[in-house]
Structures are given as C-alpha cells and as structure tokens.
Image (cartoon, rainbow, N blue to C red; front, side, top):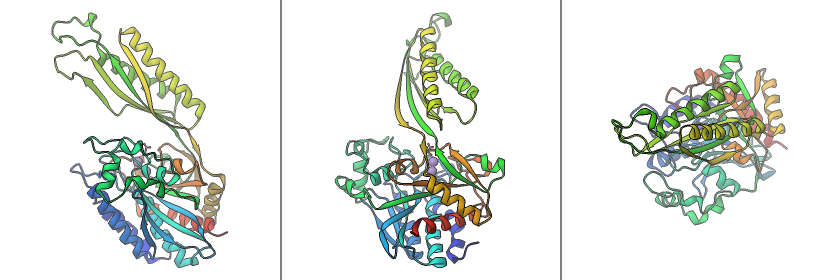
Length: 410
Ligand code: GLV
Ligand code: MN
Ligand code: MN
C-alpha cells in the first residue's frame, strides 16, 4: 500500500519519540519549552530532514517540515499534530499525527513528485494545556489569536509562558510572526481516543464535527467546624455539598446518553485538615457535546444542580466557566476528499464526531480543516496504555497521503 522505505521507520520513530519525557509511571509528560520538548523537537527535526523536507521553527516554537510546491508554492496544505502530552499520557496522541505527516510527505514525493501547492508537516507546541492552563498555544499563534496577555499565564512553578519561551531562545514579543496567511487547508491525522471504530469494525473515521467543550470551576463555601464535636445535622459541610453535586451531575449527564459527557478530574478542599469540616471545596467540570443546543442544556442543568444542592445544604456556590469552545464542523470539501481517497483504496470510513479537542478546531475558524482517525485499542487514551498497532495505522497513512496529494494538486 505504501512505497517509501521511510514508512517502515514509523514504528521505530513512535517508540523513540515515546521515550522522550518518560515518567516513572511508564507514561509521558512532555510539555512546552522544557528540556523534553527541546529533545523531542530535535529528534523530529532530524526525521524531517531524513524525509527531504526543509525544516524551520516559528516564533512560538512550532516546528515545520516543508515540501515546496511547483507552481503555487505560496499556497500551503498543512498536516501534523501536537508534540506535547497530558501528564502521564501515551505515545500516540499528537505524536502519531506528526510522524505520519513526515512519512506521508516523503510518500507523496516518492509516488507523485512535488505537487503544485506546498505541503508542510507541523509539530505544534502546547495543545494539551498540561503545563500552562492554556490549550492550543501553537495553533492560536498560527491564527494570530494568541494574545500578549495570555503569554503571562503561569505554570505551577510560577513561570510564565513568555518566561519559558525566553528560556528556549524564543522572543515572546515576536509571536505575531507565527501568524500564517498562506495556509489553504489543514489535515490532522490522529488516533480516535475512543472505541467507536473498534466496536463498529471500521478501519478509519472521518470527523464531521469536533465536540463542543466547556470547562467550569465550581466553588462551594460552607463553614469550618470541629470534626469531633459538631453534630452531623448542624454542619454546613462544603465537602458533602461538592460530593453530591459531582454525583448528581454525573447521573444527569449519563441520563442524556452518549455523546453527552461530564468529568470532574480535580477537587480540592480547604483548609484540608483531617479533623476539620471542609470550609471550601473547589472542583472542575469538563462537559462536552457536539450539538450546541444540547451543550447549552447541559450547562443550565449543571448550574441548576449546583445551586439547588447548595441551597438545600445551606452552602453558597459559584460556577465560573473558564474555557468555552463551541462544536466545530469540519470542512465538507476536506471530508469529501478523505472519503474519495478511502473509497479509491477500498477502505470503509465512518463519519463521526470527535469527543476530544484538537488544534484542528482552532484552525477551522480560518481555513478548510479535516481530521482522519485510526482506531485506538480498547479506546484507551490520555494514559500509558494508549496503543494502535502498525497494521491499523497503515490504511490511514495511505488515505492521508492520497488526500494530501489531492488537496495540494490544483
Ligand atoms: C484534549 O485532548 C482534550 O480533548 O481535552
Ligand atoms: Mn490529548
Ligand atoms: Mn491530541
């Protein structure tokens, strides 16, 4: 199915990249502007060179490999994904899309020569928000949406994005230079991160919509009291209020059915004493749905539940939404190009929503964007068990190469 000898390097590269940023718990934690990130960028730059690509790094630290077009070199079709990982994440989320892009640019060159438009593969910086509480750093810089104020956002050690950039030789005052006006399309190759393809027996997924995502922080205020002397009936226990809220939200969202999801991944109690009734609890809710009307209903439901529980338990609660991404439809033209390529290769592809967020949702505001999924073993992702065997990656690579060639031939 694939001609370039470089395609055989892909499993080796996945393993090599999968060693950079290893945690003691067998996973990866590779975050922007850290030594692991620099090491990974150097490795990826070397592989881009092996593939015959022109390598450059932009003002925010995104790394590009370019195959210049013949007649329209100033029009660029971009592929790739992010180089960072969640804390204790796996080897495939993000990394696969970059490595697949490198080998498939070499494949296009080998099988058809340079197309009219330029093809580029990118290793994007900071998609996950797992060091700084800001996702999509690299893609937002490309669209010109990364603001100087956002560069002041700090990590857990108090280092700002701007400070971290300086630490790796980047000048934060120049981020506007990362903005691109020559992009004509973006195609992100990614693992599904769920189990729909595996369960329904499809080798490929073509994304029609990236789910809408909101993330909120709920603060529950009660009263601190002595754990030994305060009767259960006279407490205003913020912990019990938060516990009931978390459970009620999960029950209500479960009742809506898939793909409605809500997650509390972080909860902190204050003052945090073993023998003190909790005065204040702060927890997060990440909730998602690809239909904007349902997402709105979920938001109202979550807010209403917190208010009702707080009132009944004589607590106060506030809910602050700190991240809001509406559902993002993918370009019909790119979906059709992917579908046509899959059909030519005799492969079945499922049209599906993405439950995960991706840089593609940022770029979709500006240019035609599409996403191609390959299956994730048991749907596991954002954990060290993330895995897709080579045999399940190759069909996707073939469709990726064909579609890149299609989009770059005008
Ligand atoms: C990113 O991976 C997300 O969906 O949160
Ligand atoms: Mn991820
Ligand atoms: Mn990802």
